[in-house]
Length: 344
Length: 265
Image (cartoon, rainbow over all chains, first blue to last red; front, side):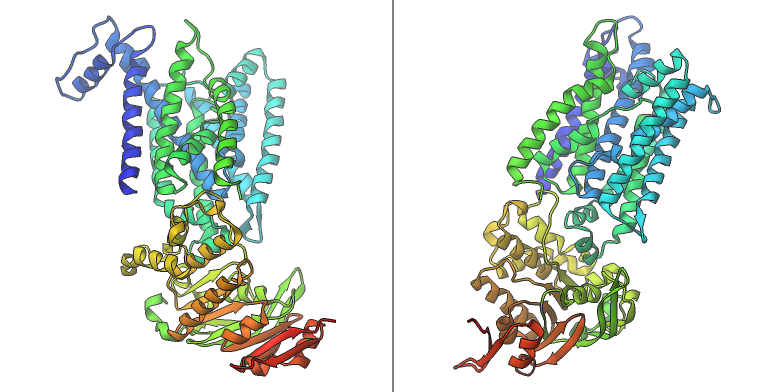
């Protein structure tokens, strides 16, 4: 068991690493993977391997590609882990960060900034608005769904639906009042893209994702117990309410950090944990880190496809993940259901 | 207070004038009851008598509207959940599972309260023993949610046994089981009590209760009607009145254990 766990995590990590080397070298300026690796090794002081031979290769890598690939890794890991976390917290395989309002809240925050033209945080104002919007919507959903000091899962999910609906209306209203540029900007934000990636965005999101994933993994064993239902988990010594609040906060942090600079990238949080569960089983000690790695692989690969499928054009990443993710999720549902004898 | 401060042979329970309300409607009123170490207590009574509610209150799920519950010499509300989980295990009426965990993984969940203590070293041993006692060893690798109702019930019981607590609270553990496994579960419960543990078990089958319980508490309409040894509690007149059905009680020809039979026209 322990060997299989290590093998899966190692396998995913190696896959991710190779994919990143390929993704960083692909684009209008082509750099072979060996030269990409060489460039990194030289940068950290090891004179091993070849360096980029094409003109501007080095700067294309370090100014454009690397921040983009690294941000894709961070965003994917945050989304994958947050999805697995939400499914565990709700004991429901259909949950994803969107359920508790993270994505729609972030969209409202971003749209507000775009329409009002606010620039409190300079070029980062949209990201800051999205981040705060995501946290605020989650806080709202959570506080409104508490009854008598406890949160029932169904109440929480239904409250989330209500808040998501209001958020959708607010976005519509903001688009109505905004000018043509604002409407276009809002629409593109909701489609998701990594085109705005830079090292500053990496520096902001990386700590959020790292802290969130670390807290989630530390709670893995208690998350397993939630599968027994709230009562049985409590009988086994879990402070269910405290755990749920903590994990909702972690999901909000991960989700808000993920969408702040990139916009909504759908289905990663929903599909990746399902795929991982098929291979690794439902135990969170393996599911959480493996979903983070799997999410990173999907977003890096998705972004690579988004910017290379059509020459001189960039497809919106969120559209791509949804087009692939939707049918994929349907297939997963049927398969998992047939195997496990229903959802119980 | 920690589990290590409690003598495992003295984990008992005292319920004093307990009242429970749901939406201002009284579910239990004025129930006083003690559970001593080394004793198997059966809670019996008609549907809606408040048996499961009493058990839920005892394990800390429901806050009393009146009265007190004292667990191992200390008010129940002053126990931290994890300390409580090291002293008592609870089997719910229905076992649910939202992800495809295997039987071995589900039983190992019973060991969660011991993580980080010296007894975590017993984890594998406790899981293996619980699977053996419930006859589920060969199911260890199967997915829990794909099992039959009776098999799921036995896995849930194994999880509770693996917790290795001095007190066991079992809510209708026999409901989904065949005759053989009903006897098996009650024998396991009685063994636990004879080894010094205390067991509270909600039962519908009065024959099972009479055969295995040291004491029976009969509930009806949210009140405790009788509390004592089986042959004192299970009398034809009392049962006929409580169950609103004519009942005969006969001593078993060999053992003398009361046999409870509804009168059938």
